[in-house]
Length: 320
Image 1 (cartoon, rainbow, N blue to C red):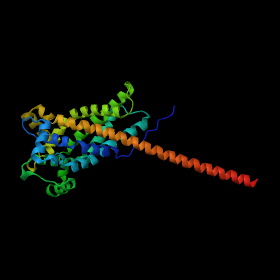
Image 2: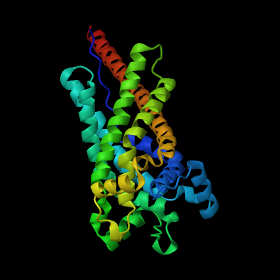
Image 3: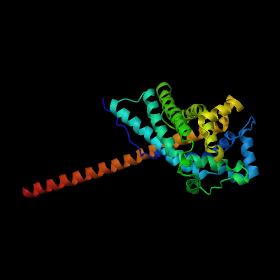
Image 4: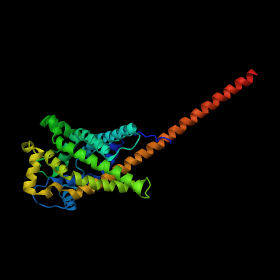
């Protein structure tokens, strides 16, 4: 039986696909952050909040912090997708078989932890820029863009502030990578093996929608706590994740851990779909380019061999 050669793709493909998705879903991400920072038992709908932002602050405020969102994806998602794929390849090469669910969870946990740590500075700036509009004018940071945010935070609060909430962020990144990437791989495999679906855009769409649903539900509690920590003012930033969890449960109830679930899913669903569909397209285009290069190399080799054979034949004929 002929061995199937595992194709290696560029490390940055996952991050690039995530950046494309971030541009599309940013307004939903901003709305989710605003809802998660709403304290007390007040209930605000997603679309009501989006209209309120557009009316009170201007339509383009829905894209506040876009540069930070792209910076976050360029660091966080590049690392988590890249490491996840490399670890999967390593396991597959070692055993000549596909990684099982347990091995996928180990790969995704390691990749998520590294991605969460690398993406934390971008995440802090992203949350702050998105939350700025609902703060009183005197408390707003008014960062011009992500790089300005990094410089100002470093000067005003110290480098350690860029890693505020890194613990919950790593936990969320582990949960996100495990629930998103592993569930996508599992759903895709199930559909390919047990249905008539073929590898293509419809399969990618279906698998990614289900993966987005799983990821949103699993990550919601940690995401809310992370958002509360990162957007905290200097005076109360020392509160730990445990303290915030206890306070939320005591004063706001269990439902507070799922605040912003609807915009989170409406954001994460399309983001997951776009990310995986674009990622699969990147891989497809890469395969086409590699095949063209291989065909060109084979053609050049054949031409060279033909010329060499022709010259050799001519020399033999001349000698006779």
